[in-house]
Length: 474
Image 1 (spheres, helix red, strand yellow):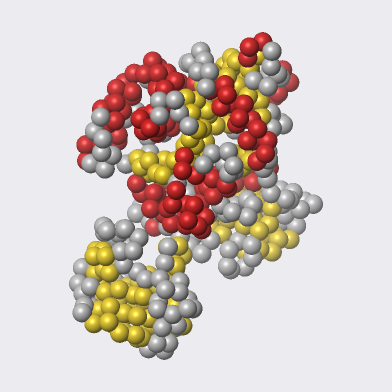
Image 2 (cartoon, helix red, strand yellow):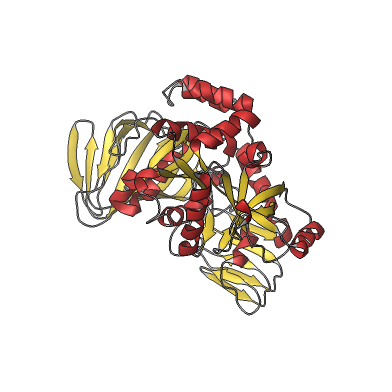
C-alpha cells in the first residue's frame, strides 16, 4: 500500500498579508489555476488513490481545509485527516502519521510532502516517485534533491555519494545534509557539483521510519508511543502529551543521522515558495523585471513584486521592492528584508489584532461574509449565501443582530418562528434567541447584518445544529 501524507500546517506568516493564520499559503491561488494544496493533491492523480491520501494539519486549520477541498467534489470525501492539537514541526507529525499507517499495514510506503510546493512537470514527478517507492521497499529512506540552477542561499543542500548498487545514475547514497549556506558557500556547492537543493519530499516504509525515529529520537518515539496506545486522538490526554513534544524537523532528527538515506536527483520544475521574492522563479515578469498583478498601475519601477486586490494600487519609480495590498492590510518592503514579515505578524498577534488571523472577507462552505465596518459595540457585515445553503442554528450571548435583505429571499428561523424576508425588508434577532439564516431560492442571497452588543467577535456563537458538523463555539 502506497500512502501520501501531505503536511498542511502553517501559520500564514511568510505570505502575509495575502496569507493569514486561518488561510495559510497552501490555501492561496498564487501560481497556476488552483491553490497550492489542491495542486498537490491533483499531482498524485493516477499514482496514489485518494483513499490513501492523508492530510496532517492542526485542529485550528482542519475544518477550513475540509471546506477548501469541497471544490474537488465527492472525491474530497475520500481524503483522510490526521489532526494535531498544535504544530510541533515535522518529526512529531511524521511519527504520528507513520504510527497510524503502520497499524493499517506494516508494509505500507509513505510519500511525505509539503502542501505548498510548486511542481510543474507532473509526469516527471511521478516517474521519480516510482523510482523512490521501489528503493523504499528495499528498506531505505529516500529523498529528492533538486538540481540547482544558481547558487541559492535560501535552501538547504544534500551532497550525493556513490551510486546506489554501483550501477545507477538515477539514485545515489546521500553523503551529507547542509544547512542554508551563505552566498559564497552556495556558489562553491554549485561549482563543485554533486550538491542538490533539499526538496523536503520523502519516501519510506512506515516500519523503517519508525525504527529510525526510535534509534535517533528515542524520547520523541517513547512519548508518541504513549499517544499511540491511547487509541483516541481527541481526548485531553493526547492534546497534553502532544503539545509537550520536542519541536524538531525530521531532517535534523533523522535524515542527517541515518546511514540508509538515498538521494534521487530531480528536475521536475520544483519551487518552494519561501517568501514573496520567490515568485520571480515562477511568475512571468515584464521587461523591467516586475511582477504586476491585480488592480495595479506601475510607472517606472524595476525588479518589484506588486499585487493589488480591489482598490487601485499605484506605484512609481520603485526598485527592488515588494508591495502587497489587501482590503485590510498593506505590506511595503525591500526585497532583501521581506523575510522579516513574520515579525509584523508576531506584532499583530501580540497586540490582539485580527489582521494576522483572518481576512476581511471570509469564505465559508455556505458562502462568505465581509466585514464592512467595525467600531465600539457594533460590526457591519455583508453576508452572501449560496442557493439552498443555510447557516447553523445558533445563538449569541452578547449581541443582537439586524438583517436587511439586499438581494434574494431569506428564510429566517427566530425562536419558534419560521418566516421569509424579501429584498428591501428586514428583521431583528434579539440577544440569546436561537436563529438561523437560510437561502431557499435558486439565486445567491445577500444581506447586510448589523451586530450590536458588548462583544461582537466570532467566538460568540453557540451552535445548536449545523450542516457542517461545527458543534462548538466560534
